[in-house]
Image (cartoon, rainbow, N blue to C red; front, side, top):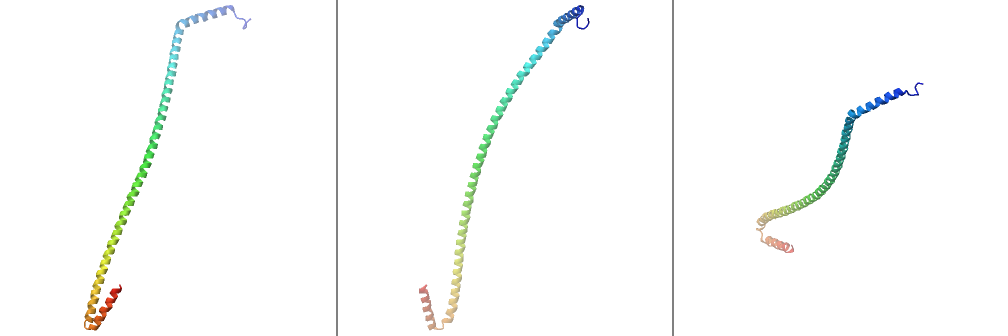
Length: 164
């Protein structure tokens, strides 16, 4: 018979060997295997718990980062707005100062022009007066010799003076 039919002696010895091996393993190896499995189970549980804590911390840090980012953006917008207002204020002050300076320079220029005009008029008057005196002196020297001419000339000057 052979391969298909089992030999009863072989089955007995195989079963007996298996049971002895099972008893030895149960007494010596099984507690070590169970301890190793328990340690591995505890390590895996600890790692899962640690991973959960790390994920929660990461989520908390992400929320804090987003909150800080929002605060920073709000501060940035406030700073930009304040800078814009400050720029407008500085420009307005600069324009006002430039306008004031321009008005002051214009007023000084006007006063200088008036002063120079008055000096020029005064100088012209002095020159005309001096010329008039010189001309009158020369005319009087030449005309004093003849009284009739003198009276005629005085009458002509009086007529011109009354017309102006």
